[in-house]
Length: 385
Image 1 (spheres, rainbow, N blue to C red):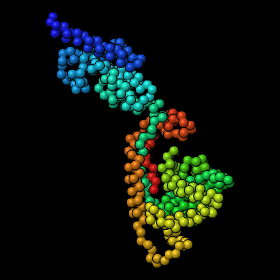
Image 2 (image 1 turned 90 degrees about the vertical axis):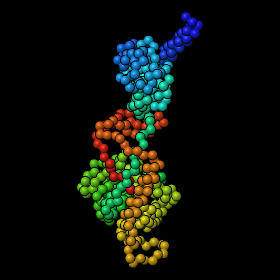
Image 3 (image 1 turned 180 degrees about the vertical axis):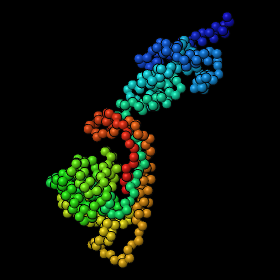
């Protein structure tokens, strides 16, 4: 044997020893190379791979490996891609689970596998398995929100109402009961000591004497809005009742915005807020709404209210297509919100299992409830104006 051939043989031996060292030491924890070799010896795909590599075949029957065939070598009964062990199908799920120990994310789990093992579609399988990890789901971020769904303007005033409670406020422990008309943006307020279902019904009765009965009321999920007494009252008056989505304030957006405004007014006049609240309500009712461009009072009682400001009486009714303005302004707001919230349409289907977001009790509270729920129906409730 010539000196050159001896040198090549030594290099080949060193290379094989190096590959064997990598294979034996880079296998994920709790899974040995011996186990992989035993399974590889009888795995149909790995057996066919070894045959194709040894005869320098065309990999016609193994298209998933064709693009890396020049990197594949045989080590005993195992197949390597460079220094990475090609994992038989029966062990791939276990390998991903081992790599995901510690609950690192998709990117980190992929990185952990890329230096040690290989099989076609590794990245896709990692993504699927990590996304299905129940523990990661419980503490992970929620899906991106769906695009904003806007409420269609009702046909007339006082048809579609939204109700809510604010409080209790300091000192006397008062509550403020808020009722908003989606058509005119007119709202009624009632300061209450007690917020039982009976008291809420009494307050609504007084408002209905003035404005008539609505066809639909949207409320929060408070017990006083979901009691049998309250439901019976609405049913007796042929009023449909919708409740907002739990932990999703956007589904009750109109009343939430009004609540913030009312709370600001109360904070600025904390000493005598009841009196100033009336002043604020009057000012609000006689100011053109930013969406419709018309004062709430004009849309609900069909006339302008006299204020302290001087004005000339317009004998001809002001011609203003507020419906078109309402639609345009809502679309502008929707486009802005969808862009800044990075929305996407949900691909959840009937029969899917989903996790429900829960209230945070402390810093260690998972974002979602432990037990998954099964989707029984998917529909779109009215959006928010």
